[in-house]
Every structure is written in C-alpha cells, then in structure tokens.
Length: 333
Image (cartoon, rainbow, N blue to C red; front, side, top):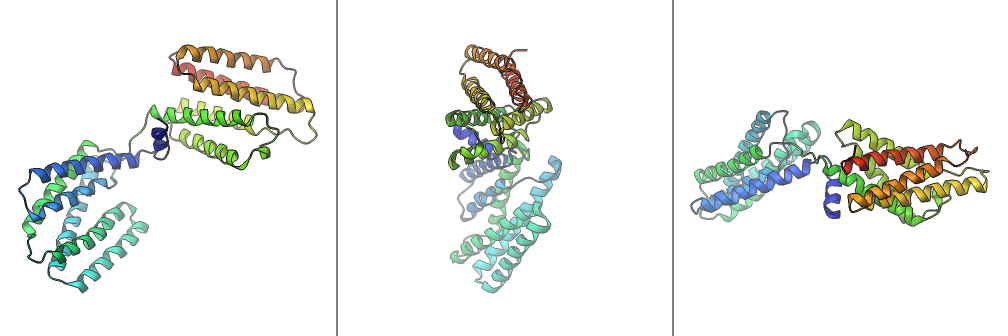
C-alpha cells in the first residue's frame, strides 16, 4: 500500500498512468497481431509502431485526438520507409541530413509546439534505428509493401488502445484521499516522535526535512481534490495544523505559556496519530471521543494572555475538521 501511495503521489494528475496503461495495451495488441501475422522480416514494424501507444494524447475531443494520432502515425511510417531506404542503399549523407533535420525539429517543437514534439522525437529515434536495420538488410529482405502492411497493423493496435483508454489523464477519485490521510498520519507520527519541542529550530535536519516534505505533499495532494467541500476542509485542517506545528513561544514568554503550548501540541499530535492509525470503525469512534475530550479540556483552560487563546482555538478547529472527515469515512452523519 505504501508503494502504491508513493506512486500516486508522483502522478497526481494521472497523465503518466494513462500513458502507461495505453502503451501496455497497445504493445499487447501489437504482440498479438505479430503472432497472428504470417512470418515476414517486416513483422518487427508491428511492434515498433505499436510502441507509439506510449505517446501522450492531445486534443479537446476524442475525434481530435484520433486525428492527431493518425497524422503522427503517417509521419512515423513515412520516416521508417525513408530511413530504411537510406540504410539499404547505404546513403549516409542523406541520412545524416535527415537525422539532423528531425533533431532540430524536435528542439523547435519543444519550444513552439509541445504537443507535436513527441511525434518528431519518435521520428528522430526510429530514423536512426531503422537506418541501422537497413544497413544490415544486405539482401533487401524487408520489402516496402510488407513494411506498410506491418505499420498498418501496428497503427491499428495504437488506435484500439486509444479507443479503449481515450482519457488524457486518469483521476484517482477517492484514492487520492488515502494519500492525504497517509501523509497526514506520517506528519503526526513525526511530530509525536519528536516529543516536546520549544521551537522548530530544535528539530534535527533529517526530521525537519521530512516535515517540510510531508507538508508540501499534503498541500499538493489537496490541490488535486475535485470535491470543493472536501478540499476546503483539507485546507482549513492544514492551515490549523501548520499553526499548531510552528507556533512560536515568543521572546519574553512565561514558563507557563511555554508549557501550555508544548502540552497542547504534544497532546494533539499523539491523539491525531491514534485516530489516523485506527484499524476498525469501533476503535476509531473511541479515539474520536478521546480527541473530542481533549478539545474540551483545552477549551476549559484559562485564557492565555500571551497569545489570546489562538493556539487553543486553532487546535479545536483542527479537531472539528478531523472529526467531520473521520465520521464521513465511517459513514456517520
């Protein structure tokens, strides 16, 4: 599960996952077509063109995406034919000019037409690979009609993959909430392991880097939550969490004030870790009750003249948000 969450955290948009699934499906279909096709030296081009399923999709509609893929496949097939001819005829200079032109086009497209850059990059790579295949084809066993037939089968594999997985990106839906709770639990665990802290500067470098990484990850995950109500709850919770974590004692603060701030911070994160680590609904209800009792306890403390009770109010706000989120999780109103 931890590996799965780390994977999602690195592809919150779901673009690379969509490309991976589409590419795998395209290659699987290409392998099937290759096995079904009659033996021929040009059959390798079924697999070569099938690799194009790894490309990103561009276009607002499925029809536009299919049109872009069709144009790209035509250009790729033409590149394969030209480089094969140059290789079979040992035309080194034309191939050099052709390769330089494609490489230059790739750099230009990255700046001026990013959506088309992948197409030219594929053309650049396979022009070199196919030129080498032409060089070793001394008997000219690869015929151009067979090359085009194989390219057509490979293109069919790509088209079918796009039709079956037409989305540009995959939204993780409720799974993204698991990532949020995982990182929130790790944040609470780190703060609990640190124990009583007077200032953030007391934290050692490794723990400090981990806290900052988790903090950044939590806000990043929240930015990809589609439900506006849940997203606002996450943001309110994180804002309170950051204040609780980094609340300074301030110069000239009394020992009583320092003790109160440290006690609230320590108690909150210990109970938050318990809630987020609960394995079943019954245990979670018990821990939520303990968290609510903790909120009531700190609310009954005398008003702290140094911070005007803001630490207490923010902790209570964080507990309320956690309670709502956890009750939703276990199906409560």
